[in-house]
Each structure stands twice: as C-alpha cells, then as structure tokens.
Length: 202
Image (cartoon, rainbow, N blue to C red; front, side, top):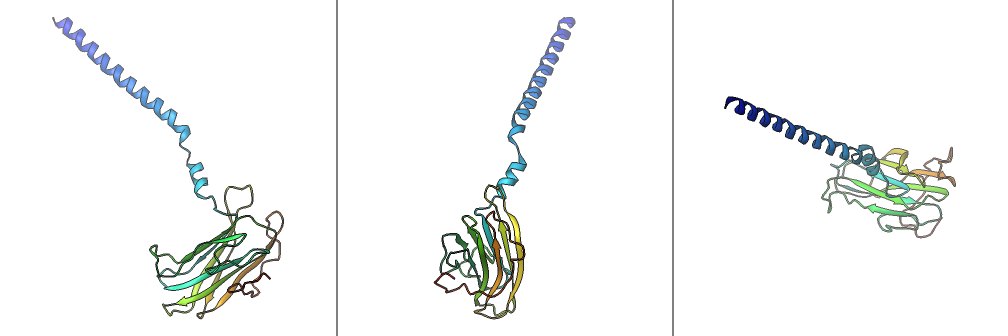
C-alpha cells in the first residue's frame, strides 16, 4: 500500500511538473511571436510625421491673454492668416484667440504647406488684440521642413520677436528655397513685408 501511495505521489508530481513546463513553454512561445510586432522605433517615427511639407509654428506665453496672429506667404500665392485661412500652398490649421473660446490653455498658432515650390517665403506675426495689456509680448516662431519623399520634418529656422504695441505687424523671416527644397544660402532676412489685409500678390 505504501509503495502504491509513493508511486501515486510521484506520478502526480511528474504530471504537475509537466503542466508547469508546458505552460511556461506556451508563454515563451507567445512572447516570441509578439516580439516582432512590438517596434517602439516605428511608433516614434510615426508620431514625428509632419502633416505638411513646410510648417510654421507661433507660440507666446500661455498666461498672457492676447490674440497674436501668424501670417505666411508662399511664392506666387496670397498671404494666409486669420482672415484668409487657406491659399494654394499654405493652410492655417489653428487660429488662437488667446483666452477667448480656448479650452486648451495654450497660446499657439500653426500653419502648413502642401508642397514646397521654389522661391521666397515670408513669415509675419501680428498683435491683433492684447486684453492683458502686458508689454512686450515675447513670441517664438519655428519653421520646419519635410522634404518631398522624407518621413519627418527638421527644424529649419527659429526666432524670437517682442511685440510692443497692439496692431504691430513684424516680419520674422523672409527666406528662399531652391527647386530641391534646400534653403538658399544667404537668403534669410527680416526686411519688413506687409502680409495682413493684402489682397493682391506681390
């Protein structure tokens, strides 16, 4: 009787070990099948994709209730800003009015292009309204470029501009891109060029 009990205990422990080993082998197999599908690098690349070829971003302090407007102009196109949100090349994606109708708390405007034609581009900022009555209002403008055929954009230009009075329109950048979407050496300057309320191409 004791021999039978001993044999029964051994077979039970062997069976338990076999079940544990099979479960472990199944888990390892499952992990090995899932590993090729987990690719953090691909996810990072996907999130850095730009919605357009040339993007222009405007930021000013979130605690200043002011309506600062971004204006951009592509070669041979009409200026794009709050009163003309789309042209042949550029589109204004976000028009920020400061605290008015803003649930995000961010003071941020953003525009992007479809394509990058050769020629001169212009970027202006305009202080439309300053309910906070705080001066100067520091703004930061960033231009990023995604060349045709590339997956992500790279920062091309960045500048800070202080706006000192309501109604001020300041040219942040004027620059040229060549036929391969390369920045033309020596073409970056900020000679004033009015973009707001200009209906005709210049």
